[in-house]
Length: 455
Image (cartoon, rainbow, N blue to C red; front, side, top):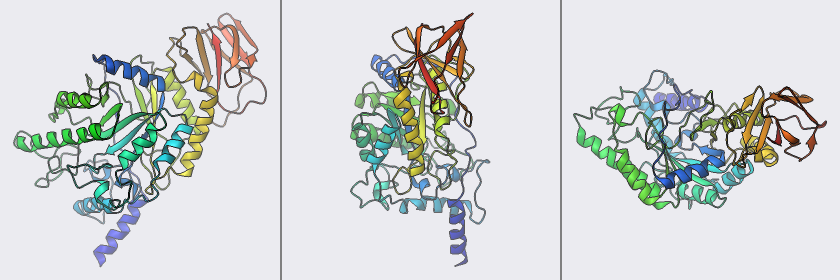
């Protein structure tokens, strides 16, 4: 009885706590352009989209804690001390019998993200904890075989992808290369004393590692062969790589993947080479402009998945982040965590709608643009139309501040009229010694503004 009470108290404590991940991915030091022309073409299409969504959703949503990491034994993890490590893992795995999202509504997700102005999506099919959000034939640790098994939409991946395809989104699937639930990665014969890594000596047990490689290959093939068109395979867990003596044979995986999905963009995060088709700085923006494919992945709150008391970013903060990223040549994928019931919560919807309203008026300065050599002057960021003549100047308004009467910048000197992009209104403009000053009309909403002009 005492033990049950302790477990219940621990679960309550854990349901109100979050962990900060001890490290985040930066980006590779170099970029290698793909040689497959179909991949190059798909990348160009993806680069035009600029704004997407990344869904983290799994058993970690039930108590509202950080995805997967709490079962890792690395030093930065904090856990309630009333449970042993094994008790904690048993409790965590047990969330599979509690994830029962009876309100699951992927059409609502797609509607909200379309309203937000997003153009592509990435859905977490499996995080590091190994719990599959699709009907895998190679494990019982899947949403289709636990609490949600009798629901007509139990094969979650199918319905999420269908909902977004119906909105003409580019489709991406996140997949974790490590699998901490799999006995061929974390083998219970040994303690997990190697942190996030495989917990046995691969050289001593090569047959077990070969079995894990085949398991990983099989699961990726399920996702890429059974669920319709997939444009992006977003692979997480960069420590599982040849350089770290955890070779899963990416050439074989890539050949299989593109046999099912020609032109597939592969994102083997942080592993420079032919399978990192775009780079993925996490929760950061590169300091300078980068003229190759990249994407900052940044959550809408402080967390990737749903938590009970999130600290949200404001719509203006997200807009400012998007503008800076696009001016520097990248895309933004915004992390949104659906609730345990299977919905996008109202607080997220409100913020996403506000972002979408701004993009409806100013999206011409974001979508389908390219970089320009002079891309920033103070609070003004510049993007360029593909026609080679049109420039967009976007003034980012600091939160809590009011728009100035005059916006000014050096270089990128306008030729002819400067117009307010949201209305097409001509604005009073003068340029003296290479410095342009633009007078804004009165009565504008207190938010970032975009201007259009020729050079």
